[in-house]
Length: 281
Ligand SMILES: [Zn+2]
Image (cartoon, rainbow, N blue to C red; front, side, top):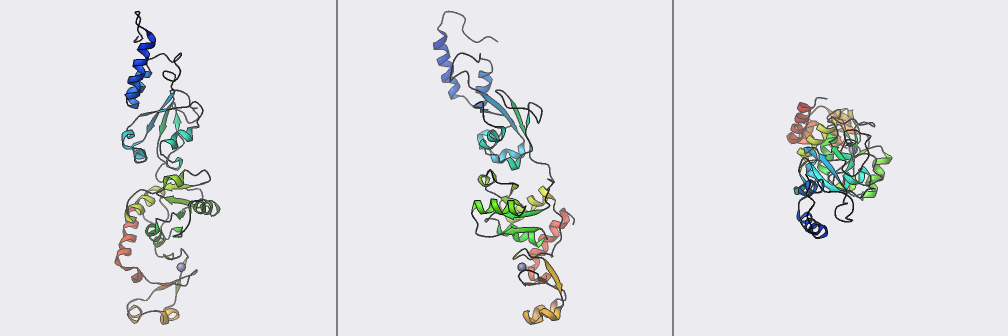
């Protein structure tokens, strides 16, 4: 459809009106209008470049509410990398598969390109195995993962640079709810943990990575491995009631703490049972 004026009305004045309306429009309306205008000749208005992004619904939580749609249009400066465009939307690259551009993974960005974003597959393969480092705010999740026998490093004090460095050095996946941390260039492997409480977060991590479970084999305090220990060897460190009620004990090879099933209470028994129900070891 031809929408430029063909009579003697001033083209310049008409274009100024168009520019005014374009600025007041949503991304989607703007894209629809701009796509029908000639591209050349009006710097700063009609030569604006854009790309279309189609984020899978599982990624919408990273977007501001007004952008939570199957298709959004974003400005493109002609030189930004694909990764930059994705992260500028608020989506860490750890949370997407290699993007598909114009239907192919080898596609290059250009004005009008269509970028499809999907979250990683679940379960997501982990080249170095299920070894995690948790952000300082995820202490409850750390204890739960250890309870299930999953190798989980955690300290309640570490700055962002420390976390990124340690994750790389120890080949661990950094788990966090801080998107800025996941966008750090030096980060080798990371993942955003979904969920407001430790139970939901645990369910998310188990669902995403399907780690092998080995409940009651790891120290919930320090991540050390537990070894069975004869009752007599630890008797002097236990309350009489514990000695009476339990027969099997284990001790942390790293910190020496003594464990028995009852030490964790019914609440943790329930966590283990639930994890095994949804993801057998
Ligand atoms: Zn320990």
